[in-house]
Image (cartoon, rainbow, N blue to C red; front, side, top):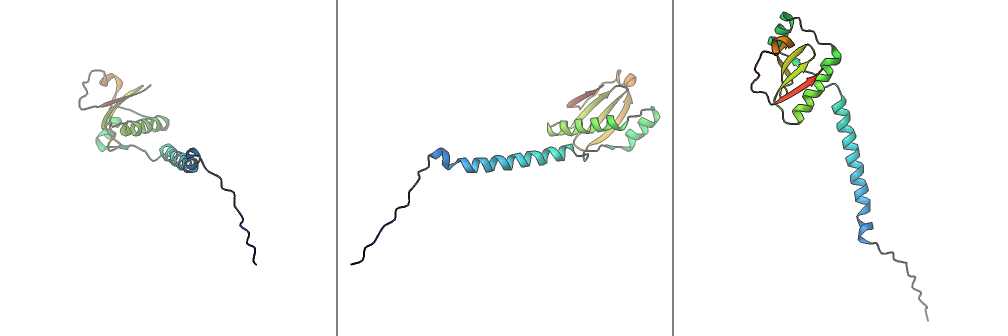
Length: 131
């Protein structure tokens, strides 16, 4: 006569909360990595503005000089405006005013602040003030 033994393996039941806990952790990790990658790309200096021929000529004629630090600020703000749906923006600086196509990241025209104070700006759906 053969004796057979059954070995029972203890079974642990999982509550519904425990069943879904692991994927949530993985999803959060993926989101955190994506967020970090997105922020890294935003912080890159890939959002450089192009100066149109017309704007370049106006800047030269009017003696407008904008330093690199200010250009970087303008570039970042234009990119931010673009992400918020702005197509054409008026950028007001301490000594100059620029009309910039956020859509194309191109400076369309430039004028000094004195000249800009007597202008009417149309077809602009965003304004950036950088003093």
